[in-house]
Image (tube, rainbow, N blue to C red; front, side):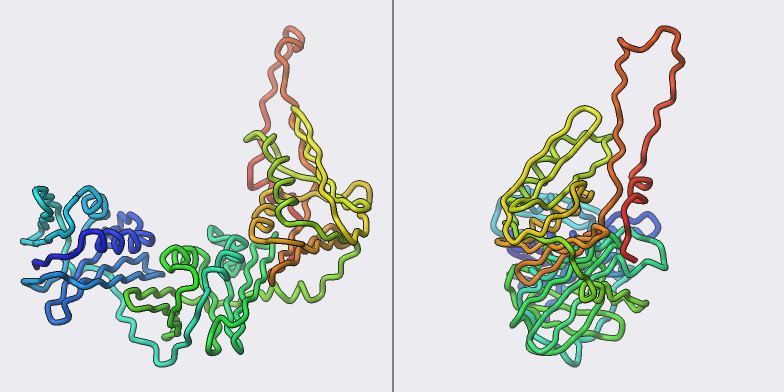
Amino acid sequence: MKFTVNRLLMYQAVKTVLKIVRPNKEIPELGGLLIEADESSGMLTITGTDIRTHIQRRLRLEHIEESGGMILKPILAEMLYLLTDEFVELESEKNLVTLRSGSCQYTISSLAAKSFPKLQIPFPEDTIQVKGINSLIRRTVFAANGDNIDYNRAGFSYVKISFRGGMATAEATDGSCIAVTASPHCADGDLDMILHEKALTVLDSVVNPNEELYVGIVGKVAVFMKEDLFFSTMLFTGNYLEASKLLSNFHGSYQATIDAKQLYELVSGLSVIFDTKDDKCINLRIEPDKVCAQVITGRCSSASQVKAAGTIPTPADGFHYRPKLLTDCLRRLAGPVQMEIDQQGFAVMNANGSRYFISPRGPARIYQEENPEKKPKGASKKAKTKTTAKKRRKEDIKWY
């Protein structure tokens, strides 16, 4: 195999495909990139996979003398970046590949292309044209827990996306938070799919905002395509929990309308006092014409408030929430946010076509720092108790 290609374009294509490539000791080929040059079409194809998801980028060659293919290590990206000439030549001989650009030259080892676990996915018979899928992903994917390996709760790692009558909707949940969003004029057909949040995060990073894609389903695989990109990922075929139905049955007892940016700055500002060992918790309460927040740790406390309209006050003690849940939701909202809280403390924030359902949690555990100067002589040393993240999560009140 021997060809010449624009160095910068190949570097960008390699960086895109590497977003899905991870080292794999059992299957070394999965930790590399499949590079294929085709003389008849004059195209270079770069493919990467983690078995569940495939990414393929295509770009036109400047010149090709011999077709072929090989698997190269991710270090290829660094080599392309360090080269300075406009074009780069790749030539393979046995299990070695040489890169030449200007006065520079690199030689790296390769694996046989035939050993690459490449799926042969046909072009979908029926596709719809979709625009603005990035917005749907960014407003929901954070609410899914991609690290959940419990089979019975596997749906918590996925995002459901539906295209119906020109409207696109998406929803996700991890049991503590539900994210539901909708966008009009997003598609020209009807389609439903449930996809893993990690695959959607990668898709968001390789597709430009408002870029049009052709989307279809082949068997148990969802396919996203444009002129130079082919992205496929496995569908979730288990029982998916329709978390959005809970929102239709939600009835708030307390409410307030506040500015999303102001409330985000309030919560994130109070969160700076947390130390790594602190049980991160924030108390929210609605008072007449304002929303108040307070954080207490073993070292200090802090409180603040923002103006609000249309308030129906909560009890004086308010309710407790995880700060990260609040900030994750608020940073995706803009302008006036209508916040409702029911008598158990479950909260819903609604703005810009998005609704976020947040579970409350118990009060924070306060850890007092020991002062060695005040410690009586001869006092026995007590083992420090640690509250792990897993134990803290048990204090969250789940909706399911």
